[in-house]
Length: 440
Image (cartoon, rainbow, N blue to C red):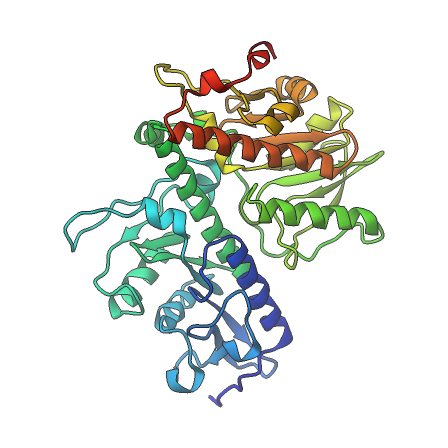
């Protein structure tokens, strides 16, 4: 096959640049770490592996950092391709896989370390949050290799793992994920890192992580609100209300803030604005500025085949006069939902702020179990504007705008961070909670 020149097509370059910038913003790469690859068929029908160059800055990729390789003839010297090209080539050869990514997922990497004598077989990582459970198949394999960078052992182990799992971890090195698109592979590493972060938070809060894992594995229907729909790959460019330029701007701003503030991992959660007979709906609420996601216009009335997520928006609107709804998976709130005060056996039922601004905005935030009915959820949303559903994310509402709804999960994240930080220091949270919150 004739060598491809360095010049990348605008579409591929833009794809790699946007995902690269997003991975840096989400802090799952350092300035130069990791790599991304896709299968690509050019205008003449030739197939290529397109991969980032070794040592390239993923947040600031230039055309010369995108390498086109023959699937059968790798020329490392000419293309300066990643040292892990062989690994990505084997991943891309798997059925229904067109993209792969390697990310330095810090939270998941830390929580999967051990101090056992090497070589050994590390324990797999078991997520305890709904996103990790449903989107990662309930388990992420973890392997130790003698040479954890571009080695023949990695080229054998990683594709074997990804043939059976969405993502896999090389101990002390990071996560590899497959996808039908680069966005799906990125979605999986973001979810994986978020799952690791939640486990780390729960360990800091002295929660019974292993007991929770056993419950998740034996009875997930009791731990999580509902099964989550599969990630979609063919709808990100859909916009069904292009004429609503001001509202489109609001969706873009809110989606970017959800992602950048880490209120929900990439392409998770949902948000909507109520109309007279229609609802403007974003089923992938966490959207980096340059990537976006589908924007739908759907009837307010329920329809056959509704996803549980869309159905929940419709049910909340039907039982209330709220104008906007936002659903996020705030990792700090998920951890707090499983927290018990020292000496108590039951997890808390309310998150009480100990910081000044949190107390001003929310004297308390209710925590309800998975499976709480919509009528109870709406009642609590009327009183508190935000509710944490254990194993089901955070629901927030606004009377006017998406910005109003966004303020609630954003504030909640900080409330939870202050509580976790105080507990880390050995402080008594109950003594720090405002007295007036006791009766709220």
